[in-house]
Image (cartoon, rainbow, N blue to C red; front, side):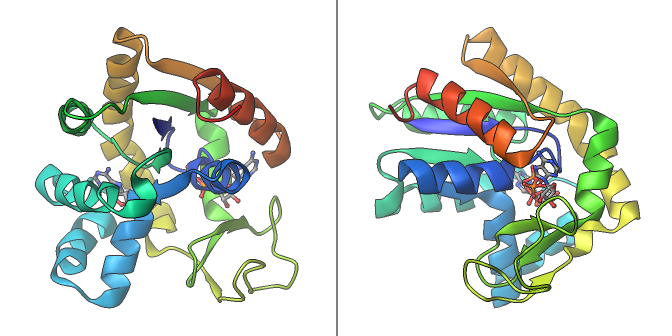
Length: 218
Ligand code: ADP
Ligand code: AMP
């Protein structure tokens, strides 16, 4: 099955998806991480995506859908997948359904609901690992050793699109499309809502329960 983790920028999708994937053995696939890896590698796809990401806009569907289709065809993505950051609009949601129509797999969504004011505080303290992409927070989820990833020892950096002006653009450009995606899954009775407020561990317990209820794990 494919579990889609929906939420606004900074809602905790990456943090929770990583923990849930580790606990359940599902693959964690995050389109933002895939784009950042392409940018770091200096690929043509990365170059094209970068201008949109830096402007706080969605990368065009043709690029994004092509990239995620290739990733979903890899061996580790054949069974259970947690999708983080995709779909971001209705066109992408429809493309995912169309791709799954020829397989026995189904896609169902869980929304991590977080108050808008909390998002900016979360994003401003976010640091990510340049090696494995793990997400930290300066005060809410700090690494054991300052500036260093607990998991792989990589250097922690601030995302360029977490600068305040780009965060504002992301909220303006992306939240309406998120509402449409939420409505899309709700209309087909494939949406669960989980309260994303509170400590990371508490949210994780609520999410794991909801993920079990939709069949990701026992
Ligand atoms: P998303 O992938 O949805 O953009 P992240 O998982 O990267 O969000 O989380 C955004 C920031 O908020 C990170 O710095 C993360 O450590 C922090 N964070 C995640 N969940 C919580 C929470 N429940 N309470 C406080 N901070 C959180
Ligand atoms: P994220 O790491 O999920 O916050 O994504 C970072 C940025 O990558 C977003 O602000 C978008 O510019 C781009 N991006 C990530 N996922 C998608 C997607 N599914 N469709 C279009 N753009 C995306």
